[in-house]
Length: 208
Image 1 (tube, rainbow, N blue to C red):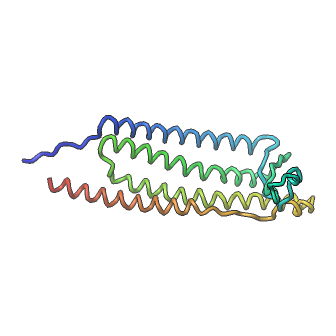
Image 2: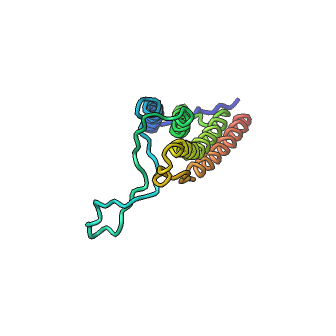
Image 3: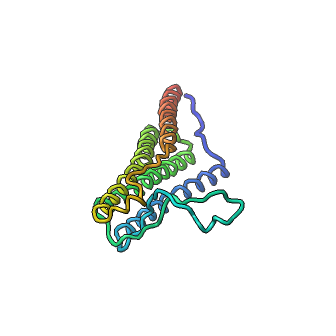
């Protein structure tokens, strides 16, 4: 009857993994706090929203010889009230990426603990990473789209009584950042790697 020694990590590796796992939990808590603060600001009185503007020259910098031109692309606008639909979409704009961040941090914590126990290739790990990949994709892309649609709805609502706002604010603008798409693909590959690793681990243990 043959026996195999259980793999283990060194004290230094355990300390580093514990530090990473603790940091992941801290980032997740910070993301959750940021969402709560955003909700209080959006649903509070006189909410301030960053609005994309059609652009204007920063005249205060016109006399600086090293600067050829300077324009502003957004403005912090304080509203007396916002439509309920716009409030929820603005909240989702920030909540969806934060949810993806929390998911990544939870998986990072779980992976750190699993590595400390020298058992990283758990069957459920690949599924968890796959879910996080979907969260990153949805949170990054849909969050940006919801932000653009919410501001478009807000401009349309303002233009009903003050048409001149369309000369200042974009009626619809989304500057889509595709970085979450790339991160989601990378996480999907990591999930596939863990699935293969878990299968190989089961096959290896079956040979012992």
